[in-house]
Length: 424
Length: 207
Ligand code: HEM
Ligand code: FES
Image (cartoon, rainbow over all chains, first blue to last red):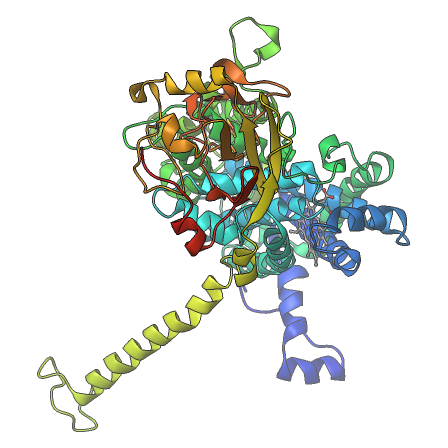
């Protein structure tokens, strides 16, 4: 990958294999002797954590699929049976359901890391775009997975989201029926969601492969945002970062274990313990927490603009909120990668994180309720303001600040930044 | 394009036989790709048995005046309300211009039929409509819980109000609740979901 290979097959068998399928060489060059910037902090450990969680989801999911029944009359009970009767089913089901949440926590931290340290900038645009593709696939996978237990939230979440697609002009209703495979969310929908929920994680795994390939061409970025200039700027991946990543993974898994064992259902919704009923809608439909900011953006658009009515406008804004990440590398005009050296942009970034969390809060609330009980200050108003900021950050703030902001002085090299010989 | 094979027309002159073969082969591959893709896309549409499962019979003799029932048809709810004289009068008094959606949305009548109450019922006392809010598909509340500001249905999901003809009056829902194909087989039984022959003799007409 970057630089000539340093692998030396030491045994006869390795040599024999290396001449036929240099797979050990690939692993060695990618994860053992891979030159890695010496200044990576813990924000760089979430990539490894994500890889572990993809494996946890795939292994626990394959086990669930051995006992799960994708039928509208049995799906709910089959999941209950997994948690009560199947040996260790309670553990594996809890790992899978909570694993999805922990997967999303990690991906959000990983993405905020990228936004703060400018990881999306040249020469890493493709790497970033592949990341956004993975994120989209995770959203689709998580959505379809949540439908499988066929509780009230499963059913009505599927109903609301598929109906959003019906907002598309002309083709919307045909596409909706095509997705449903019937005249409503039902057996056909459940069965195909199961098939796709099984498939997509493997597609994710393939895109992760491309993501790592694209990473290993320029190598890792790092907190000061300078490129590696000499060997002194780097350390071999093993043992330095295998140990650092390993430590972070263990701590993260410990927190995960607390949820899996002691509060397996806190991240779930009580209504999903009621079997799906097509005739009764729950009082308050909410998606899983990791979709809430986008749900808030969807609902913030309650007005039409020209030929676009409110329903279509909301859908466009929601998908636009993710779509805009694809073009981010070309929106940020600053040559400076790391926000450490961008004193002004840094504050706008911090408020961006606050806005994203605030949108999540709005998504969980009834749009007509009052924020903190302040008479007249409805959540919908807050959601509109934060939505405007969300888009403004990408469309106005980053392009403009990159031009007008005067960045702070940066160290001469990564080595200088680490060893404090900055002044040189 | 080299001249190796002696074909005429390299260097931007007449098209060669090889150019023709490229284009023809490419064209066949594209059409073939499309033909293979189509079955794989179309298989997700409602299957023949799903389409055939389309009809139910409902005995409405037990639905008293001023009450309603919800029945399941094609996987979703259908509301059947036995309207009072007052509810009928209220629905008929509304001017078309007061409706956000002026169309009848009645599967038994041509698209574009005006949305008067008369165009939405076969017999004025029985209002029969599909029960998924036209906004995002929630099931609106009715007589048992909340009839909204227009005495019909109220959808709590995002606040849509429907009138006593199940027409949208206020809120984010874009369309009236649609009227399914139906007719009265006898005085007291309704058949919902009709075969083409039944649809021809169902007694519906634009008024
Ligand atoms: C990207 C990886 C994955 C994510 C984010 C994910 C997410 C989810 C979620 C959120 C649920 C609902 C859990 C609940 O609330 O009870 C679920 C259920 C399920 N998933 Fe996955 N999943 C992934 C991978 C897989 C794989 C690879 C398989 C099968 C090979 C699988 C099989 C299942 C089954 C059978 C269920 C239904 C049982 C249940 O609800 O616990 N999943 N998934
Ligand atoms: S689904 Fe009825 S108002 Fe939104």
